[in-house]
Image 1: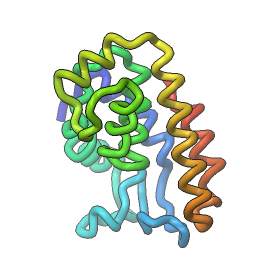
Image 2: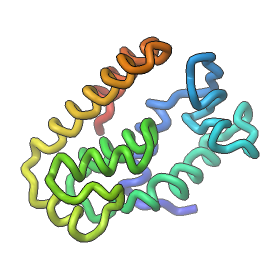
Image 3: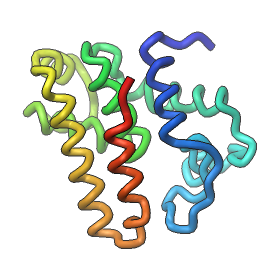
Length: 161
């Protein structure tokens, strides 16, 4: 499959962030490989997942539904996509929508795209800060996830081209 240049740049970082095979007992997603979780893909052979298969699933189930192609700031696209992969598509999009003051319906349409594109470059830093606050609140609310907090915060800082 041929992917857009922006998706191809983003997916390299997503796959790096997600890493390889993991079966951590505290991970609510259970067994994962390249971030693809058995919980959400029960019919996939997670242990033997290939990068090509993971890339295809991210394109089909995350990139396409997120409708990020109209957003002009590539760094913001990467942050929103990465957060969508890690915390859920609607969670990521709603956070972006709240940040720019549009209806937080979890769908990137013409209005969200226009308002986001009219924002200053600092929107990326604001989104990153909101991500960190989200992770800190999540770890405080669910202590069993505290073990992941340092990695999540580092992930936000290292998610860049």
